Image 1 (tube, rainbow, N blue to C red):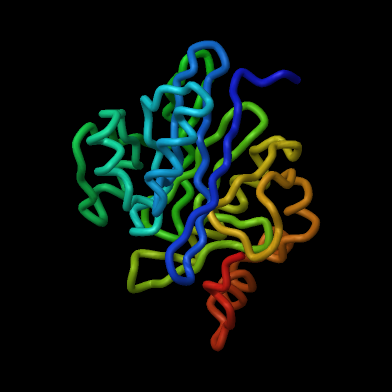
Image 2: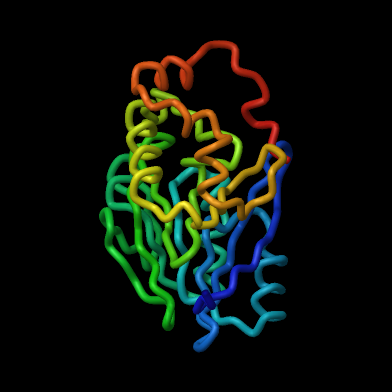
Length: 226
């Protein structure tokens, strides 16, 4: 199936953090949305120029600094709309110009490309994913190899992330390609069906077992991003 959009991928980082940043471009209008812009403003601006795209939209999966630290710079440069879940905004007090709160299953159009907002709390109180035809951008909710940490002091919840993963498992097309914000070695773009067969957090169906495993002590290499 021919999609209405292109996906351009940037990898940027600071110290131990390595983030994947995604630029979605509508093929007809060349309107662009960027997901979780961080670290490399020059690389983002250069990419937009190279591909002839106009940045109109910023999509934020959650409010952690490594996902939002270029929002103000991009607002100054391009004045785009900014989207974050209403739950995330309320819980953490995130604010910036042009901020638009959304709720579960709200949707927008990027040119001729439909983008649906999926509320997936657990890593944070109001984390979200962005669903397009054939693709899902998952922030820190799920990775190809695992799922996000659930720090109770930071608004995380292993119960909620279990429910978010169950929703993704039972609702999305297994052929949808998964684009997370971080990698532990696997490249972005594996089909959801791969995660269903290989990601241990997708294989655990019982909530109590999931919670005890997700919150087990002495986990290593939690931030060993590749």
